[in-house]
Image 1 (cartoon, rainbow, N blue to C red):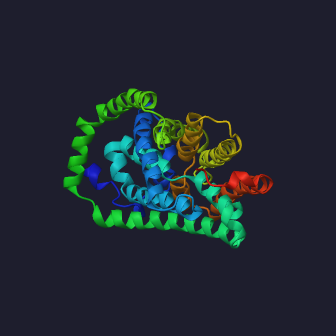
Image 2 (cartoon, one colour):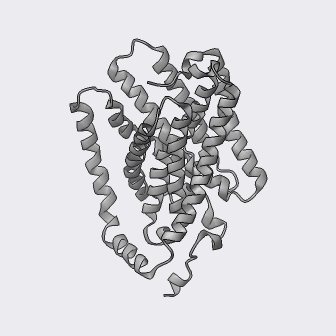
Image 3 (cartoon, helix red, strand yellow):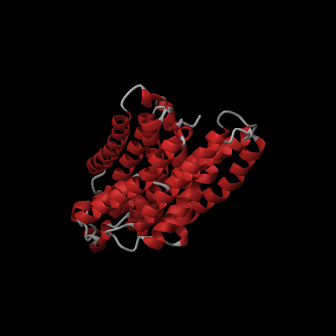
Length: 327
């Protein structure tokens, strides 16, 4: 009873250490399997959201995955103290694995580049298009995160009955759930990749295969470099590195015309699976929200966007074919 009474009910009352960026607090081997499992789900959600509209339109491609992922992140973060207390692996799976794989920083950066240099830029105002995509997508991400937290607090207030159910799940299920799901998923994905014929949506399977590698790379970078809660260097490196790889793979897909159909699917899968999961908007928004010193917020945001956009704008101007939407 005393232990439960000591647990803060919402993030409004927790300390700075308790609101450090998601991925730096737990770095045990047991955290890897939840990240793997939820990254499968996250990348499929992101690819599925592309069907809500015209994925060739920069705004649509950048808006929905980041809004939905940040909404879920806000919902989960509001319950952080309770989830971590009863089932810490579920928390890191939902945040680092699921939300980090739904949202994509590299995809947003590329969509803004398409708005600036893409096919429609000659018909309208390219700089306005560029800023519209960046500002609208980042604003929607922050709104989604905030709304998710408020809805979470409204729908799931502290409840002894809910805590009892979570403790039961924690003691009876978590020991074997994620190991079994991980072990079953590996041969299943290999069989699907080998046996299914190459078709229009083959890249879905390969994207799922690449997704855990991107999420785990991001997780490893955060463990190694997110030692300062005022400046999450690991996430910065992940977003910049993933965005550069993304741009390079897009260049290959657009320029190398001799690629076989399977090779094209693999390249697209690296873009959507590995790079999409290596980079994240949801953790980026959470870190901007939890960094205590305002000057570091400005520095972190500026470096994250500027170091990517400078390269994208320069290369996009030199090689305009790169900024044609990936088909």
